[in-house]
Length: 118
Figure 1 (cartoon, rainbow, N blue to C red):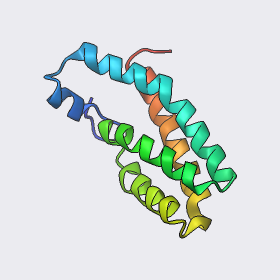
Figure 2: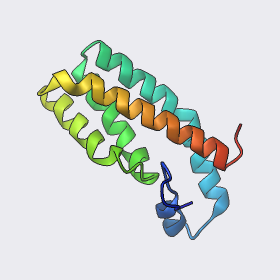
Figure 3: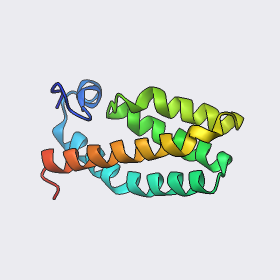
């Protein structure tokens, strides 16, 4: 699953778990099941300007973003996490959260298609 232009890839999972396709499918299922709730809570916290909660959910998303190499989100989630934790540059947080949510939504659609989850 490491084709050029993909929104995500499973290369790190394949490498660390010796290409165990069952485990990769399990991780995809887990991502598809849990991430939408996390993103919804992140968006709500951002809308409410609850920076402590934005930090919590940004931190929580970071691992999933790294596992599936959602490349454009890797530096962004860390920046969001820093801003929320330090309560600095908060004016750009809502826009960043919306970009993250949109990218994750598109990645999930690609995963569902690729793994025939629809």
